[in-house]
Amino acid sequence: MPEPSAIRDTVASYLKAVATGSAADVAALYAEDATLEDPVGSDPVRGRAGITEFYSALEDMRQETELLAVRVAGDSAAFHFRVRTETPDGAAEIEPIDVMTFDEAARITSMRAFWSPEDVRSTS
Figure 1 (spheres, rainbow, N blue to C red):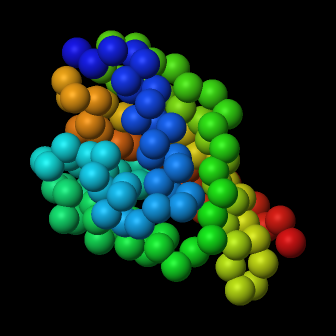
Figure 2: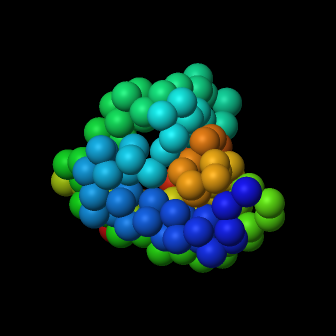
């Protein structure tokens, strides 16, 4: 089981990569056979190649992330964060809660994002 500090480091790296990294940077934090369900209820994405493709939609967006709370227990973390996205039409914010599991190397083995479209707020 990874150390809690290693899990917290991966969560911080994830938020930084989502804000300023490439799709490959984000996907590199995942195990090769990881799953992603974003948002919960959507079809899961499986494997690093699919995860890279999923995050490629963020590459041309200007985003900021802020960690609001994180809880680590065993090989899992739940964290609440804010994402502000700049678009040509203005800005939007959302505060999802993500639940992740991790392998021994603190790579993400599963991610489930809890949010829905009504959680997105226009800020401009």
